[in-house]
Amino acid sequence: MSNEINHAADDTKTLYALVYRTSDKYIYDVGDSAFEDIETWNDARADECDIPMTAVGDVHFADFPSVAAGEYFVVIKVQAGESPDSDDKETGQGIMSWNGSSEINSYSERKTWVKNG
Image (cartoon, rainbow, N blue to C red; front, side, top):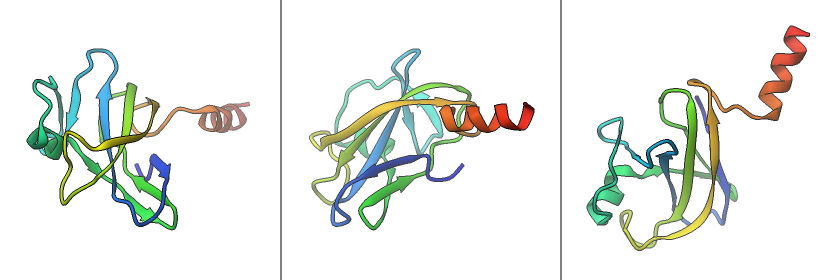
């Protein structure tokens, strides 16, 4: 898995991603490497769940977590201060269809079809 999460933004900004499991709305806790009930959303919780993104020019990248196949909701936020904060502003969002090791998209489906066809 490599750089499946990406978002265009000025390279002077610090971005991070949050990943939610769509089936139960649980959030991925990076420290525990597990999905958990979001409970109270506060600064400590934001800092536990952020997936830091790395800027390469004006595109920011992060690896998708090692999780089971499924659909996940990804939110990209702009970090305003020294660490992730519950008030950080959202700059993007989307659904990630995941097969357990890579994103499922029209390109990956096409590669499978061409290889098998």
